[in-house]
Structure formats: structure tokens, C-alpha cells
Length: 235
Image 1 (spheres, rainbow, N blue to C red):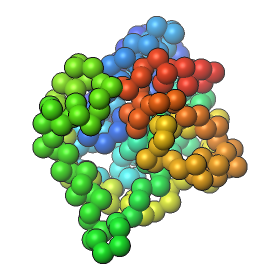
Image 2 (image 1 turned 120 degrees about the horizontal axis):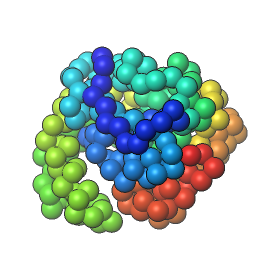
Image 3 (image 1 turned 90 degrees about the vertical axis):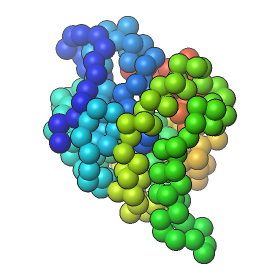
Image 4 (image 1 turned 180 degrees about the horizontal axis):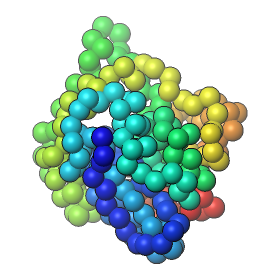
């Protein structure tokens, strides 16, 4: 599927931005211009089921294949957040960027607690479709009003069945065996996705791992300056 894209900047040096579940390209409203100011042409996608892109099916490989169909190969850097990090890892060999950055990637989603059904995790994600502005603000106390309003707008056009499409990823270890290209993993502090043991294992596999001090899962919205600082040497 060809995805909807948004571009900041111009030129031959390209950066790719891939958002997480529930969001769309608007989650990068500060990162995109920030990278463009460094001389990069920045291309951000709306994943299938998100933003202005088409819908379903939603297996992890579908998200990855869309990236390959839509985005140029050989970018300076490709950055994927959460679900976008999962999709990027599955597409990175074909996209062949010079560097890859995985932001709190969804590589090791917890399985259901004992006594709960396998759909418990996806159902909890899908329920976020109905979050109010007040709930979004309470869950993300460091976001400014613009990001809260954009999240509400993104939820309105998000197909929540994407959560069920990635259900097989829950309880599955999707950590790459090795970095295909030089790769950085940025994590929240602490991270709901990358435990200290995961971080140690990723380092042993050849990834650089950096925590965004004080940042949450969506660190680029929690603390833009700290997030950009964590990318130094990679962008």
C-alpha cells in the first residue's frame, strides 16, 4: 500500500520518520522541522489505519511492506517510534538507510497476565480510541496543548482494529538478532518497552542504547530538546 506522506525541507539528504500506533505524521510536528533545519529533507508517513492512509490488514509485515513501497531507499537516517520501530526493523534491510534509530520500539510486548485472554493487550490499546482531551492530557502531563489537540485529532481518524492486527506480536520477542545498519535505540526513562535486561541484550547484539532522561514512551513530545540531544551523532 502506498502511504500518505508529509515532507519538511528539501534536498538530497533524506530522513524518514515512522510514527507509533494511534498517532500519525503529526506526532513529529517539532522533529520534522528540527531535522529540516539541519539540511535534511524529512519524509514522515501515515501508517496504514492511521491519518490519511488506507486501511487493513494490519499484520506487522504489512506495515513494513508499506514502508518499502512508499519510501526512498538509501536515506541518511530512518527513525521509527514504537509500532514504527517494529515496522522499520522488518523493512530496514530493504530500505537500507545509512543509520537507523528505534525509539522505544515495540519489539517485546508483554503477553496477557495469567488468567486473561490473549486479546487483553490489543483490547486495551483499542480502547484508547475513545480517550477524551482531559484523559490524554492526564496521561501525558508534559505535552503542551497543541500536542494534546493533535493526539485527539489523530485518534479520531485512527482505525483501532490495528491493535488486533498486531496481536501476534504480544508475548513475542521481536528484537532483531543484529543491527542491519548502524543502529541506535532510544528508550524512555524508565521504558515500558525496553527493560534494563533488554537494553543489555541489545547492546550485546551491537545496538547502541541511550535513555532519554526523564522522557516517557513518546519522548519526542515529552521533552523535544532531550530527545534531539539523544540523537546527537546519529542525525
